Amino acid sequence: MSKNFIIKNFFEGKIKLWKSFWLIGIGHSIFLFYLMPFIEKNLFNKDNIYNYINIEQSTLAVPNWIELSFFSRIIVILSTMFITIGIWRSAENYQGSIIWIILSFIYLTINNVLPTIYLLMYLFV
Image (spheres, rainbow, N blue to C red):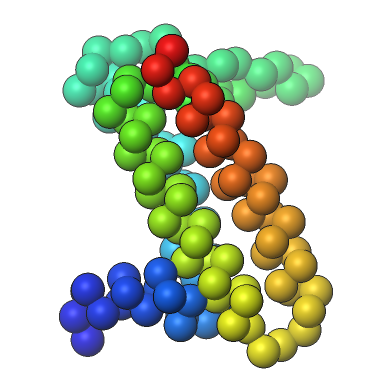
């Protein structure tokens, strides 16, 4: 099975929902969360790409997507749109319980669609 065939099947929603969501969707989120700041720091010399959140006695560094370079923003927007469409179509084709479809749609809307719209608004800032 070639890579193009797998990518095409994913985009058309022909891959099972659990595989689309957990393997591809969560893998994409982990990729963006860890690799994009690494790329920004090493390729574009940007150190100021984190927001810091204090939780009790520890500090959590969270990437600030608005501080990414234009190139990185484009990568984030396009890859997130591709992943969202693939998972959304897998959920539409899912034949199991409707609760998993609804939860998938809610997750995609909150975690992918709304942040992508927000990032698009700040694309040229």
